[in-house]
Image 1 (cartoon, rainbow, N blue to C red):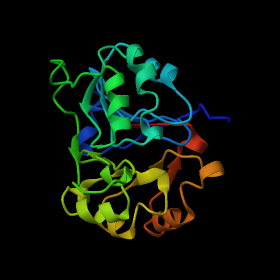
Image 2: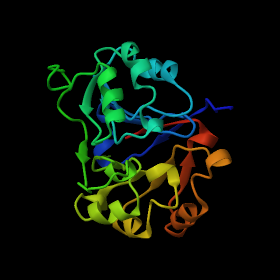
Image 3: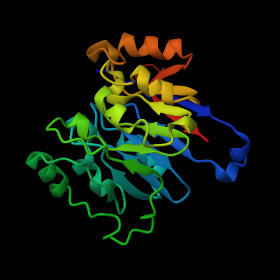
Length: 246
């Protein structure tokens, strides 16, 4: 499997963030089919999920080597957490900011065996949460349906949340301000519904961490929905790591 190691850097400039000192970076790492997103601040790298087909820890360390680290896991699917244990000792003082809301004994064992402490319990200096997390509290054995959503006023990362869950949470968080969407479930046709897109009134760009050549993601249906809304789609499979400064 060949994975592109190019880097695409985008600048989203608005009047409130023209100062260089106020910039943050949101990086969607090119892990193939999977998800690893990092919010980079001056003091820390806040990782959301850490899985996929290729471990890009060397590229991550080029950006995050001298920073503190937190990890938030959206849910228990393997392609969202399979690099946690192997990378734990390479990321200084890595702690768990948001554990997955999984009832699976297997997933609990994976998280437990990684040796991660909760950030608050570890008295982590970056335990103040850099983004919001929302859990739709949907009772189901389906791991995708248990996905935590991570978001700020600028971006939304819905994990593998699908259309049924989108209807549960779309009215409960301030989606009208969101400019950046990381496609749910890697761009599967079971996510990124028209219902969700109607709530994203200020959406400027959509991002996909997937491999269409093997898995068919992002699905043509999702691409059509975005095109109809005139939202450009950028894929890690084509561009490599995607870095957005804002």
